[in-house]
Image (cartoon, rainbow, N blue to C red):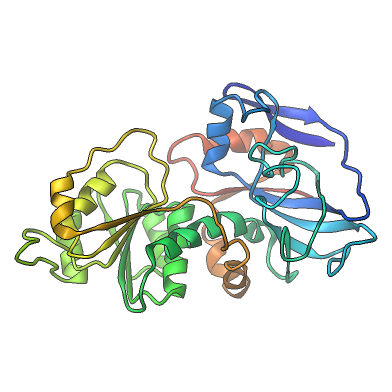
Length: 338
């Protein structure tokens, strides 16, 4: 069968591999859609992931149909539509250094257990939307790490897939007002369509002044100056100016979450942070959220569908990966299979 691997530094390519055999405890999946993640480009840039340098199978945002079930497997059946915990495979992380990747026609789940690696979803959820389950779990973990309280006022920096997923997550957690900050008008429009209360184009507007207008003045005797009344900030942008801005404008006791990947060191003014007692938390992966977010996707899949900007057929996966590397060219790309 055909599969896409990292085959050299900055190079992905087609590889012919054997279709996996199915044992009595296994489930065979026919991949129906798989999203492209920014980490796919990072893997390629490194030439793969040890010990699979030059031979790393790609694809870790899949949705699939079950086409074969081992005799010992319970609660899963041929024809089931499923979303997948790619971190729960026994042969390594799917598409992130493990033996298999979801930019492949078929994937086998060894020692399959319903609710551990697989969650059945209704057939009505489109495949390209179901493939958002993994990145939306990443977004929801970021939301949970910032521990929002009911009624909190929230700002999300970055209206890419994770930022937009966080908007939906914060709404689910009861945020009273959500602002999204970005520099691309199209992304800001999508943020409004999925439920943001307001947006700020940071290339054209003063972020601090606009947040004070929207969330109130959070200045105190110890925290003077332009201090927004925002309770939670989330950095889903990955540019240094975001945490630097937040540490400058955060009110007493606010929280800043970092889910974005910063590729360079960020200098912060600890003196300014001290006076606000800003809490900074970090978020990576999805320890518990992979199937927690599924219910919301099932219920609100039409909103989640707005996050997908491009779809490509499986045979054009290499072109899709190349487009995903081009800054500003696409927001969320999903590869779909026949």
